[in-house]
Length: 590
Image 1: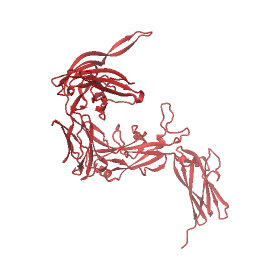
Image 2 (image 1 turned 180 degrees about the vertical axis):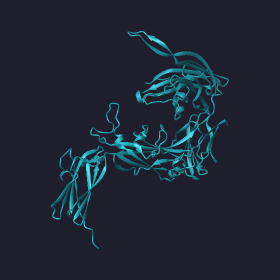
Image 3 (image 1 turned 90 degrees about the horizontal axis):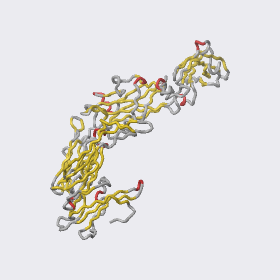
Image 4 (image 1 turned 120 degrees about the vertical axis):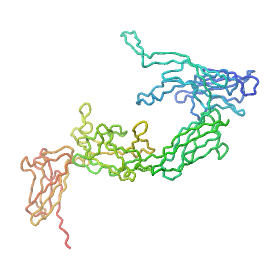
């Protein structure tokens, strides 16, 4: 039967009539075949047929992969043929699979700890002949064990058109684990689940069933009154081809019939994509979520139906990415965000609300505590969002002009420490760390259904999160702690110099001094003033503070130079230190 480099094992044999009108039986032989290694390893179930005289039947399908291509079915190498089948149409291939119950799937999972399979089930598919062509039905579950029960061994036979399965299964009781003493150099105890092995008997039959895998409308173009395409994926889980499929969405209906408009019957196990059009309707301004019904008709005339709801009323909430940082001063950052709804599915008039929050991580799992924000509307203690928008305010989001604004206390935020008392966001000098601070603003739609309140999934979610990068003003000023701007005004024989100091450091300074040199038209120094006379006159600059000062001279001047210095650096500042110049410009005469 085989002579190649593949590993062949688990041979199975069944005696059946290949055709209904055959007088003698033939042997159908199957075996597991594995070839290649690693990523290139291929597994298949090889098939052959031998007649009563021992001759190999030509034209018989040579592998199961040829029959189940593009169906997504993978048959376990430890397969069995069903017993007592009269014809090839009665013969099934059976194998066991493992699965996870829905209860286990809902439990919390991490990347390091996925949920293990906790029960087994018996799968099978049946051969079918049609005009001399051999195919198989879709794979179906023949028997399913209870939770925490595995299949140790199985067999099955055909009786009166039904498939009877006999299974040996073991139930593992993890909730009542039994201690087992392990004798070693140091004795220790391990706990193993209690076991109970039983024999199970199952009875079933292959059915003709339609499965709807997905119903996806053109979400980006949902507009009231517009006809939009809807992509529907269906799978034939039956024993024979589906000759027609009727799709009804709301009041729109379309039938796909084999042999018309290029539609071909859907073979058992095959998945097919269908496209229909639906006209979007609304009730009182709210887009309707229509129900849909798919009805399939099989070759024998039997039918299968699937129903569901097509959700079209999905807002597209977003955050405008421009003009996020409005102001940086006094250790604070004024942040502004404009929320909009880019969908015809209005938020106003719905039972939904919009929530907004700021996070420290791009995945938006670590919310920043409200203590670092001012002028905000917060929920009660323990709530997860800074702001909740509902009621009439939602109409502003629909129109695209709802704005939220917060004053973020950066100076306090960077004082946070880790478990080793080391500051997380500040350097050794107390300044904002190199690379700055990243915040992430997120807005989402909150809905409430029978499962409680939660975030609504949007078809477009790339605009729900906006990153904000906050940099040190000291770095933006190329390391200059204090920058100066000034203006000069002449009042007859007197001159006033207005000085503005900008502390670029997020650390305060308490020993500052300003010196002003006044020059005449010949560029001669005519007078000098400084702010420092006694310790009480030392300038205090709070974190990132902007302070204004005025110096009045009783002499005329046309130019001034201003210098700022910290007396902790140098006793008397000179023009070579942090300084700038101001020139008097006469007003033009008419």
